[in-house]
Image 1 (cartoon, rainbow, N blue to C red):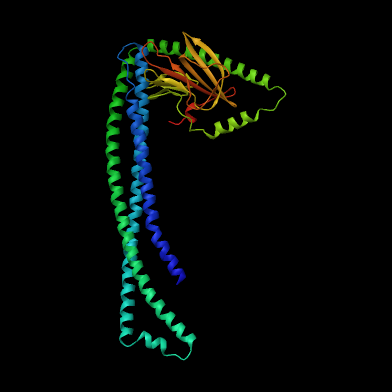
Image 2 (spheres, one colour):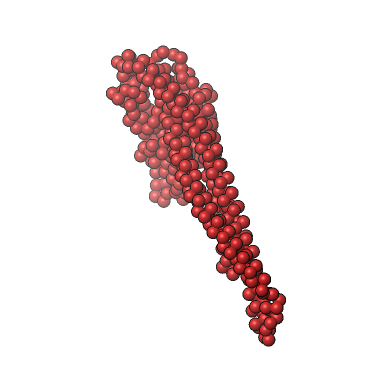
Length: 398
């Protein structure tokens, strides 16, 4: 009897658990979809230039390519979510089929038990049955038998009711999943249409640039030369900061706070905030990249380039200490922030209020991002572990 009651209590809890699980999955999907839609809406605020110069057209191509990449990521994620909903619906349908069988079996067992009880009652008086004994012990045993039989009937009735409630719950979950799938399919269709438009726009810009291939290569080479010079200066600043730190700690073990900061930084890989305020697009990825649509035109980026809106500001990706502020050329400023063994680098700033030795917290403003001649504010961001370069995209939350 005790085991049977425990089983019934478990059965009572299962529908609530399963309903909570399905609702949790759907809520998570809705929350992630809202975040993605918000991100796309913010990205739409970053406009392409109307200028026809090669620099402007390359920037426009980078913007469209970045938007298309994000759109493609969202389309694929939505497809994955739809497949997940299909799997959950299929599982629930199989469960409903099994529950319907179990429900019918419970009803049949209950009907048989009721018929047996009624048949016994026609020639059987429970009171007479209990009292028709000479020992109290036997009387007690018979009373318990009658009580347990009656309770068993009630428990069987409860089980039937529970099966029915569970069936209704699973059917409501199926309906909920169907509605969610319809919503996802609408989002999917919209994003696929937008992706096709962006692909067409990308091809148009690529075709325009192909007609200027010679000048384009010269422009890319000039940009790469500036990038290489900047990277050399960053390396020089980092080496200087490392030597300064080593001299300060000469003969001493690495400070415990630096060890702790390094560990905390490492544990946040993939979770660091984007180092720019407002809407943004990553228009330059880490490493050697082809200019979209042109395999023979490449760029080598030792960090990432993040385009923001007018008035965009750089912000610290983690707690740390300013170890260097340097002039980049043409009034541009670079800032190095040390996070234990890790160093984040913020370039193309027009101004900063920080000074060497200042302590900063995560998301503190580092400085204003300078707007280029064609009106685009682009932050160049690098990440190092001492002198070793890291791919920032692997560390940032995007």
